[in-house]
Image 1: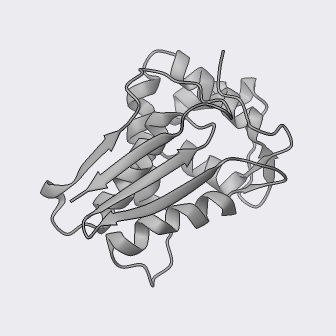
Image 2: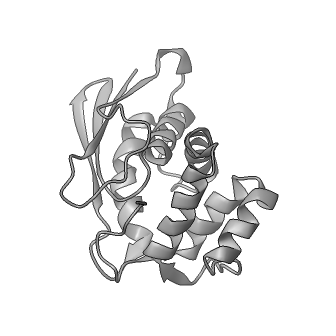
Amino acid sequence: MGFKAFDPNVEISGGIVLAFVQCTNRETILPILERHHMHDVQPEKWYPTQDWLDVLTEVVTSGEGMFDLLSIGKRIADLSPLPPTIRTIEEALPFLELSYGAVHRNGYAGQIAVQRVSECEYNIDHHTPWPDDLMYGAAYGIAQRYLTDRSKLHVYSNMNEQVRYPKIDDPHLILNVRW
């Protein structure tokens, strides 16, 4: 059991892998990276997505993974460079669709679709092999980064399983973001 790429040919940008590594305890993650031959990641190179998913599987199964992935997702959202033209939550959330596609290549990596429900509510449909908590943390972090009154932010998930290993034909993770 573990996270599996939807397509074995898909690659992920080294830049997103390094962003993840920068948001973790380096001493904890380095031995895991070495076991999966990802100890010398370069930002401009591409790596098999399955190798990275194997790292994430080990992070999740090591005990504290669920908490770590939520926090790491939020931290990645805080550190991710977004175009300077993005200034509001309404502009930032749809950018998730574009950015997901930009960090993958060579096959179907899944997709993210963002839909505006109302003036202060969006649904984010995640059809990806990535851990739900990582995706939840990233969505929450992006929303929090661009929301002026953070006390009103609520993010709800349609999944209530502790750990889910999404397959290509599984139900999608839907995150409802409201403020």
